[in-house]
Picture 1 (cartoon, rainbow, N blue to C red):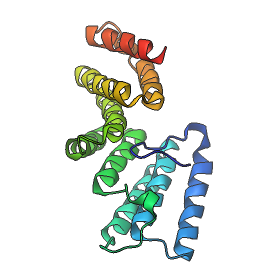
Picture 2 (tube, one colour):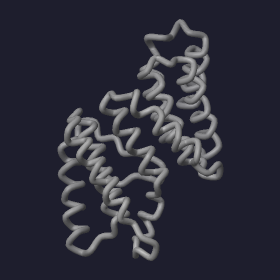
Picture 3 (tube, one colour):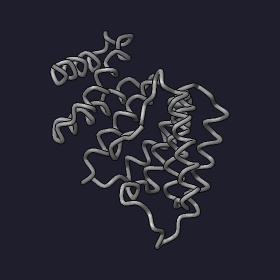
Length: 198
């Protein structure tokens, strides 16, 4: 269930495994005195599993737990190095992504957009993944032109960082564009994604 910095996990047919692993990781972390930041990140992992399973109540509960853990973070906490990336911006964008996976694009879009706005320009990988998720959420809201523009930004960033994973996500996104294929912006973007994936 590991992911690279900036990327939210997707579980698809492994939702129950993901939830079980996230809960087990939380239990282990508590036994060894895991830091609030670590527990917040693991709660968000659980939220993603519930969101992929379309379990609204459990997703919101896990998101609330993540936020409560995050509020307990204090300077000087002995965080593992690999969890230090999980800052307030990451909590915000992950909350938006989980809500988007639930189908609540109205709540999700402003969270992802705000996280992307404050994301350092130097974090190209994070910006690429977050742009993809924002584009997907915009498409859920039928904001086709905005979704194409945002997905184009993600594609441009993917080329700079040479990320096949972002391109793979966008290849999936291309399939979501099919109902709008008569739109000129959609056609242009679809062709670019096809070329990048090829």
